[in-house]
Length: 208
Ligand code: FES
Image (cartoon, rainbow, N blue to C red; front, side):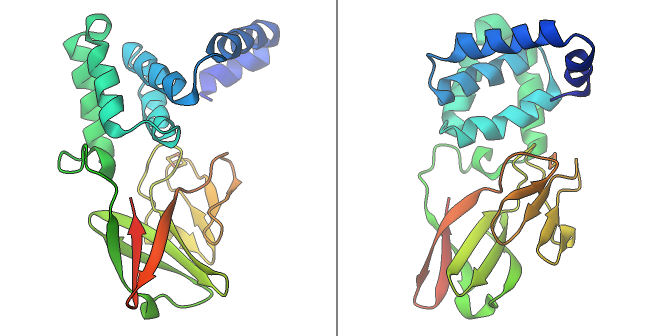
């Protein structure tokens, strides 16, 4: 929540409770994906940059594809107009979310090689790059887990240097994650995105 909303919750709790109840009630017959698409459009309409950055990954998590998000924004053209759409696309380009890159838009999910599995030491977090995406990989006796380096809050690309032991701290707003489980352990409320993985002929692959 923004500082402004936090302030209003503190100073006008009854009015704000009613407002949040209204939003909850009016969205309850919508599935989460549709709700998130509408929210993304409202962030563009009001040109709320923080909210737009925050709700793009939430729309993806809710099952919207990048193509659907683009179409939803473009479909709202009569209400948004070209200037606001260009404003949103400029931010989207600045975020550089791999799924939205022109070459990836509309592409099916596929397997990407991360390298020889023997290079992924047990009991450690390994940082690696594959096809334009950075990842944190944890391996233990139970298996391997591959996490996106993009923060679930506003898609900041969390650098390798942000890892201390198993604690990963996003440099932008200091959400903290356990790199073994992907769980958010401080400040935020959503885990790192985990990708499906497989081992084939000694090579580790992840799918996105
Ligand atoms: S982008 Fe806000 S904590 Fe990572």
